[in-house]
Image (cartoon, rainbow, N blue to C red; front, top):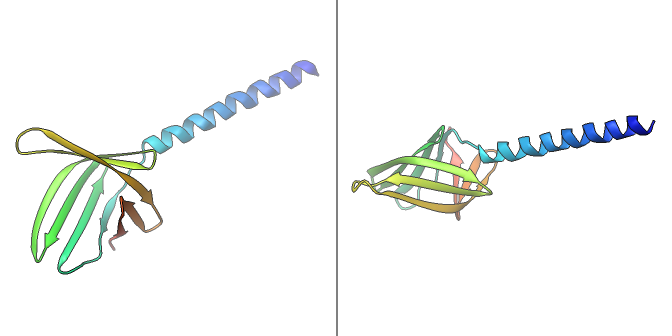
Length: 115
């Protein structure tokens, strides 16, 4: 009986390690898909379109749009964006990140999923 109990504890321990590892890997590889956008304020709107690890940000100010494309990574409730500039330098920044059922929040900006 002692050996049986020891074996059960060992199996449960291995299972717990596997579960923790899976949860850790799942949180590291978080990906978004689709478009999220801000509400329009005084003719200005921002839309983030996610596809795999790529992101396109479209800024529209009084009918004039500008787009930036780059990559993103979500880790530990933070999102890091990286963009290559015209000068071939990489620019990046990290913000707090939150995801809900039909919205995301980047820093203090809430974006809702586009329909």
